[in-house]
View 1: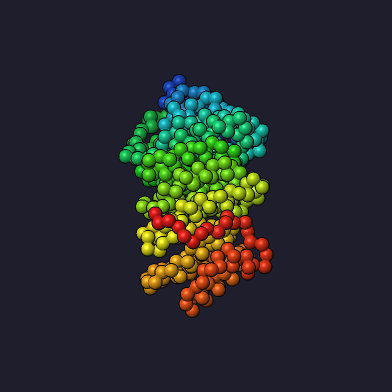
View 2: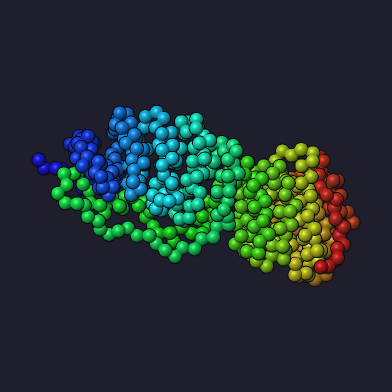
Length: 489
């Protein structure tokens, strides 16, 4: 009897019923039960290859139950058999498994496979199996949440390959948000925070053996082993294809995945922001933006002044453009969070206090258009006024009197032109906020610009007084308007 030789599409022969799965298993019997673990490995790998090419809805519940039991039992086999077994499990978890199979498979993996002792491609297969089970059988796995969460944490702890980390960082936010971490919250955070900030330099690539032979004169249906090995190695690219920036961006989503991480994430963020390492500062500023999008205002409010203290050296003088831009984005995110959150009486002071600190930082540069710090100071104030209508209301009421007083005092056309352009920039920001601003702010700008175009502006009435006079409703709470005179830095 001639044994069929299945090459490229073994699953196709079975799905078209020209060759039965049971026949394949019978032909593989000599290998699957061989005392030599290398032969058992090849038999299981061939079976896995066939299953991977079958339609996901082809096998019935009985066949799938048998395969689940078989592959989970093979996880107890010799360590050389484990990689092929993982391939088989990866193939069947895509199918419609019988009830509770996800629990049985995940429990078997956690008990019998030491993930970090496996090769890089095999670790990837473990992760793929686990996240496929999460996606397809979430309700089943939620019934065993503590054990499953602990198993996942143990499996990923210590991963170093950048491609595996990229996969994990992409999938972990879903896991963290779906499965209540409970008493394992801190342990989960520690496992992922050890990579922060990402320090990654790749100089190696991992290849696949070019040729492997299959023993001759075996009564089996076989596929060339080079194809099997290529299937078991899931990566199409070498580690250098994953960049440090890619990893850092995905890691941010993990560190800020749930509000419960805030009390662990923010101290870590501030520690790295205080570092002398430029890359640590940049990552921390970007992480702060993510924190403002995912954590509560109450969580950030416990640290807002310390966060501003750590940012202010990057804001002004702002010699490093990239750090300054990152700091402005982070500060704006914090201002926006405080502006849009429902705060109690005690928390309501956070926004005015933070904006007062911003103004104090920029005040010495703002007070004289001839100073080299004038432009950096106004750029900081402009960016923060864009963050929210409330921030615009408070800061504009402070800034405009200072600019108007200088316009009245300065005689040079160049200085006056700069002041007029600056006033126009603040007016543009106010227009961007539209109807969110009080009528007083809008009227103030309309009158100021009209007077500036016609000649000198009388600063006998402060900006805040004009706002109060022209507003038909009470303005938003704001710190007391500053005096026009300020000491030069």
